[in-house]
Length: 276
Length: 276
DNA sequence: CGACATGTTGATGCGTCTCAAACGCAGTGG
DNA sequence: CCACTGCGTTTGAGACGCATCAACATGTCG
Image 1 (cartoon, rainbow over the protein chains, first blue to last red):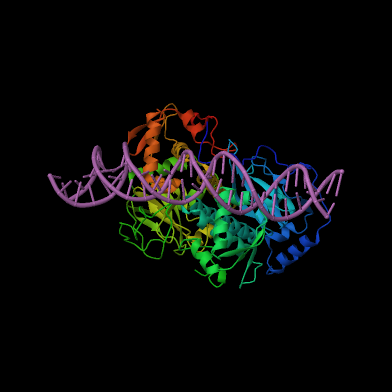
Image 2: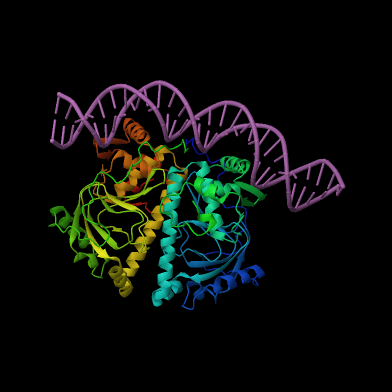
């Protein structure tokens, strides 16, 4: 007999709807499809910002690319951590599930970011594709060797881990003390900054994930997420561009509603989205 | 006009009651008191588990020890991250504060653990002494040099960061989807495992922090924490040994009430406290 | 002893969850 | 072309867990 606060009404009931065609994250052969145009472009953009010093991305650049459909699982919580992945294109969700089925999404992983780089023996979470995704795989041992061999890479990996830790702390603050409106605003704001494909004046934010994903990320229900976004729309803070993208009409208002702490490591003060 | 869900009734109103005698975390001279017996013993115990390979603790072992009273702040959120600390004795709380005063404790740091090791330019949080504490300080640059020079230390630091990340994820799950009872049980269980000074049969858990600290850590109010613990006491799951320590009467029940996920990295299956 | 901080217990209110129904949209097949 | 279906989303009404407000108990320190 379990809680009343959060039921598992929306809980996953087992292995999700996708078909696990390859023994992902294990030894099995992985699909190596021809690179999609999107993937190639994404990668070109990513590489363009390199400064000349060796980058973490360089050690992935020779690896074959694997593509997976939306909904497929790259690896499961508890699996032996055999690989490190670089996301070339698409978005992943990081999922953890309680023993009675309650689902928590602890983060979303975008193109250019790493998956499974914390280098523990087993994955701490499942990684599921929100969209169609393209990844590069790197064996854990080889990855570790590269890291220990090249100080610059080590530096970068450290930096990423620190970023991840900082993000985790922010999320704890959000889940611990923020109300529904602040959570949703915070999510929209960070997502907008993250993809940063927006024009500064009136940014369009793509939200590839479902409301359920957002809810499980923000510690709310889909109904509350939906209601909150409707309220924000009615107040003119945001506007629905399509089902999976919104326009931020009042970035400053949104930021103040997000109720950020004083020292926000994600703040971009020069950007309009970073204005208080 | 701000939220109703969580007021800042218990919020800190400014620099806390302690007196900041030294410019902690900056360049100022730090207090170097004679080592307390407790501190020496703690350290001896910690060193005893070393295997002969160089340990992270070794590089701290030559540093002078600094002592601070309960309530004092080692460094503040947003301060330049000038130092890395090893906690020799006592307990710290990691504090973040929202712009309207709502307080969040993202973790507690016990003897033998590191503070400020994430190596970002600025501290992401304040570190406040819960009890009287003893620390060893290490300059950030020197620390970083040592790390990059010695592969074993690097390994250990990585491992600690990964542990911290894992703990952060667990906490996100807790804050996101667990009810008051599960939160409190989870906290008691992890604290019991952490200090592990308990006799397995009927472990006594020391809780040096106040109810407010616990509440701000668990995303609850002091009243709810108090009520929950009373309820657990009435059911015979725990018993109050003193105001700041409880006896776990039914470890198995407590563990099941904690509602842990399948793959719990903190589970200690061989220990009675780890039994499902 | 009084002043104060911390912790407990009780009564009430509010924000979000829960349950339920309807809507919009895409895909399918007649 | 349009019913039909399935899924994600929206909207509404009511329930419930925890926050809030308040009073009191306990412990500490002067």
